[in-house]
Amino acid sequence: MIIPVRTKDSTYEVYLGENILKAFCDRNTEGFEKADKIVVITDENVWGLHRDYFDDNFSFNYQVHLVPNGEACKTFDSYFNVQTFLLQENCSRNSILLALGGGAVGDLTGFVASTFMRGIPFIQIPTTILAHDSAVGGKTAINHPNGKNMIGAFYQPKEVLYDFHFLNTLPKSEVRSGLAEVIKHALISDITWSNDFLKLESIDAIQKEELLVWLEKGIRVKARIVELDEKEKSYRKYLNFGHTYGHAIEATIGYGKITHGEAVMIGMIPALMLSEIYGEVKAGYARDVYKLAKKLEYNFQHVLNSPFDQLATFMLKDKKTTNGELHFALLNHIGDPFIQIVTMDEVKKCDDLLRKWIKEEI
Ligand code: NAD
Ligand code: ZN
Image (cartoon, rainbow, N blue to C red; front, top):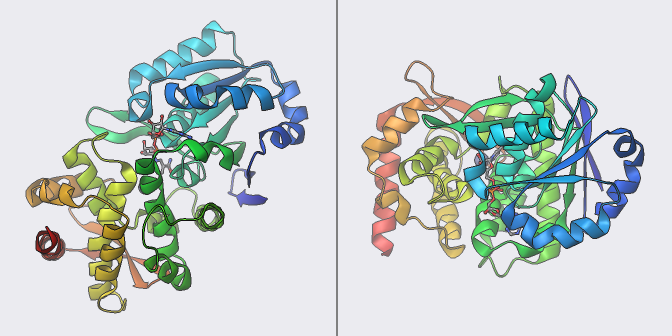
């Protein structure tokens, strides 16, 4: 299956399905044959698990550069090491990078590709559920000690290959993390799909076929929004639903100590509470989604471990905050997002209510 993404500067395709690496090679023979080097950037976990599958199905010569697992690869050091590797291997403007991994490898590789010799092509090969989101849209970045994703570029991949084969080895915690972005895509686009989620009893109850349909839908939502607004001047801000409070939780708890998706799931609850206040989302929906999140075993203890003052400090530092005004992506109705300026007092009230819910159930 193919989902096109048409941005102002480029058009590319997300090619998705199960066990499609070989077919992907056939489809791209010309491009790969023209490249003077093909370099796979991947992390140790992913390479350990999928080296054989990759070797058996990827039909061209390639080199591999391994980076640390997860968020640890989005450092200046690791960025520098990849660039050094590319120079040592005599890569040129005719080389292609393949980002084989989760969002972290994708973000790093995309940023390297955007700057190596002022820009070389790269292909995203996402291996996590979360990366159905991060691999599409062209946001690339590494972290600075003063802030996550602070150094980066908008740089679209040449193509995205989403081979569901890779998802088979994901631990449950990563399934849970990725699922939060899928639920976000449902909430900002489609009430029927969102309501379907409310019926879900547990992570284990998710059927693979069902998950694949959700991933396809999620990619379509993301692609449509990126097409409307590649550089996040308007519509793309809707994708930040759950992220203002979620990022603050992530920063307070510490990157790596909580997954991105878990933080986003937590952040969607205050965002839904605010949507009941500022939008016309029916009263009780935030509570319903909270109950769903509990059934799926998202850990809300993180909220109790995050003093509100600290959350407030991070929310004020958010890239989306301007002149001290908090710009929240909210929902007018489920499936119908908008941007609302919200006071910190109002956020505090939602935070208080969420803490009350969490404490009641302990
Ligand atoms: P990740 O890339 O850190 O991967 C999570 C863990 O799963 C890692 O330890 C990795 O080694 C392992 N892993 C990856 N694929 C696996 C597989 N198939 N089987 C077993 N283990 C596997 O995490 P992620 O959740 O995919 O991505 C998070 C990153 O994405 C963050 O850095 C976040 O900032 C970024 N992000 C970017 C965007 C964007 O638009 N660019 C959007 C959302 C998130
Ligand atoms: Zn996110």
